[in-house]
Length: 193
Image 1 (tube, rainbow, N blue to C red):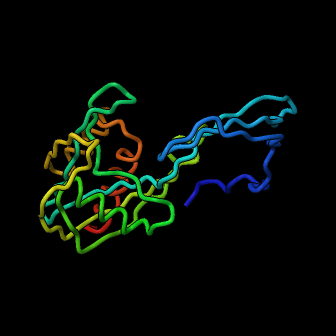
Image 2 (image 1 turned 180 degrees about the vertical axis):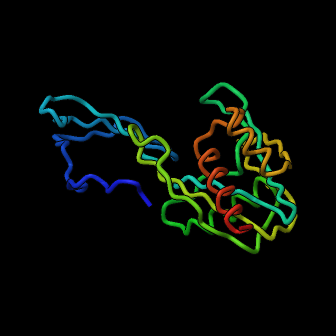
Image 3 (image 1 turned 90 degrees about the vertical axis):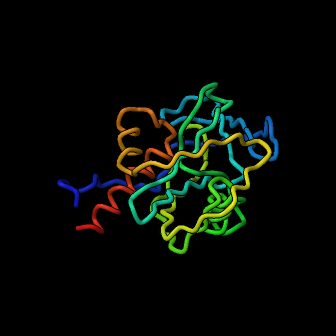
């Protein structure tokens, strides 16, 4: 419960006016458009938007002993190595759970009998419309890893508490991983009482 009531204003009011919109670039994963706009103060300008052609999906597999699995890979855009929760993209027209189940299988080999959607988030809402979802996957069953051609992955089994420590000391910086791990830890702690 909030300590103070939310401010009273119309959250549906859009102070931006779009004058025109032009797609500047697209590929199978993204579309970049440039809009001519009038900003909230009345000035003219441009606004660039990156639209994703997939939903972002993160999965936190947790076993009965409280362990999870991180996926390590070199991220081209960052030019650095990154430890993250298993994740990927799911076509917008497909069920997000079905896509999350596929991603977990591809990256870890696991299937899970219990799935909980624990988060909906926007990854960088000042420049992209990307929508992400995070699932908690439990009651795991091991299988064969099936990585995509673009993935050179390393798996790391560790206690969930250690993954949370990695979030807190900035060894995990991916926003879907950070939000998902913190939320998963809170949910699992509340279950324990």
